Image 1 (cartoon, rainbow, N blue to C red):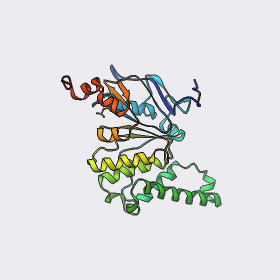
Image 2: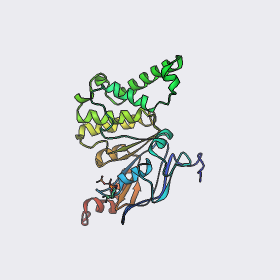
Image 3: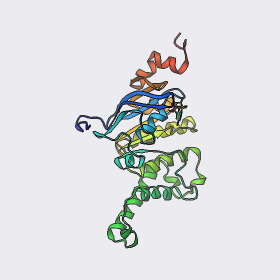
Image 4: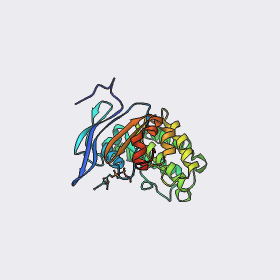
Length: 263
Ligand SMILES: Nc1ncnc2c1ncn2[C@@H]1O[C@H](COP(=O)(O)OP(=O)(O)OP(=O)(O)O)[C@@H](O)[C@H]1O
């Protein structure tokens, strides 16, 4: 099935479900991420956010439901195919090479995402040299946009926890995503670092990426950056709306704080 790309959102999640044995980790979840939007996906521990994230990025195959991207059905495609389409997620630390500099890490990300023939590798012509220069320019731009310009030539092992988080996002950007998928990018950050990350994410939208889907426990960050927030609870969608709407939603308050929180 193909949705009309002129009217459809960039990412459309429809009736997505995932069952692990008898556990319904994600139940009939539907939401959209439009071009130019930042959408937050929140919920208490175990709500199913990461599972939902893994279903969208192809790391899990849904038990049922569909994922459409730019009008095409991409349900169940492998992560590398999703990435080539423009759905790119960040990874916590795992992709960072500690002995390389910040710039080298991001440049390596460009090479990993390049598709060059063996012939061109051994007999590089003008086009390859131009592509290399373009990759270097792009890597430098990404490092600067992520606020790591002053650390451009610092080895990654010298970075603080906050700087490593920024480098993780920078690596994801080197794959040139249309939609950037972030799973808890503020984990371990203090409130000042989280606020700075929020400013950077807002700058990315519309310049480096079209849209962002962010799973995050840091409510200050989610509410500051999101145009829309989807709330999950026990695998299902509990609420959806603007940050203000979901913060005032009685069932959301109850889910986070427990019964009696509104009394
Ligand atoms: N691979 C798996 N096998 C079995 N159960 C799983 C698997 N992955 C997740 N679950 C279960 O599915 C439910 C949802 O987990 P998930 O990690 O998606 O929640 P979450 O909202 O991301 O939680 P958190 O905020 O704590 O990271 C949990 O009960 C979890 O134990």
